[in-house]
Length: 329
Image (tube, rainbow, N blue to C red; front, side):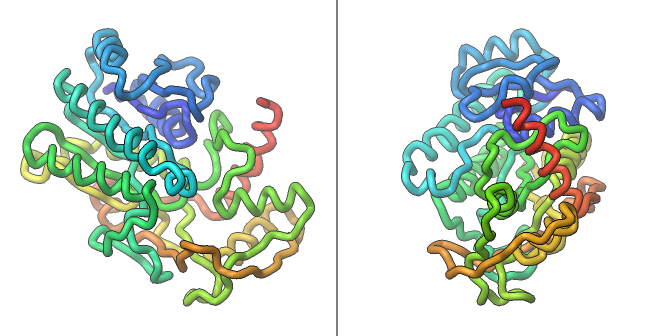
């Protein structure tokens, strides 16, 4: 079996590539390297270019006629950037995805495994959400993920493709073997900000402490990126059993099934480092939500998968990768 991974030199795509290779699935990577790292493609077939470059897509398929499916991870993903540049986000995440999927389908590659996001949900309950949860994308970025899901669903209903959309919750950590990890040395998610505050020797600010959660701080479902990658492997291996002729499009949550509050994330950081990070409280930021965690029964049943790694392991691997990233430069 062989998979084409778009965004294959990025954080998620490169980790998925490693998990696929470890499982005996051959991979071909496509990345424009706008945020990906070419070093993540070393030892693999890496094509540099745009996902909508049909000449490049033809070259890839001509040179790898045995590609069985595409794992579509390529996307712009920064929420504030999407608010400032919505047209750019719709162009890259939606418009170019249409070109990619249509052209690959024309070349006979009709299986699509799509990197979607829990950002498509309303996500303000502080509780669990399953795949029937209310859809209410809160940013242009989130809306691009929902639009692509609808496009895939409709194309699948028309018989043009079959597709599985994995709705990621909040990936943290790195490949446990430290082959790959986050490219950004100062990521904008909560753990990244905790690490940045620690390195700078300044307090970490919890923004919003009056949410309807068990300790008042926001709550997220932090899934280890290696567990996320394992879910992709299971989806590749079981693709034809999941996305069938009768049900050619399936969406499923990928998370731990448990919520972790910001205060609990700080506690995990303290446990892993053996230090105490000073915390201060701040007001809610515009657009903040209480958060939600994944109800993952569908993924557990369909994929025979469940998250195995703990929040402490996610923190540990994120810290280990950050140290390696400093050496990589």
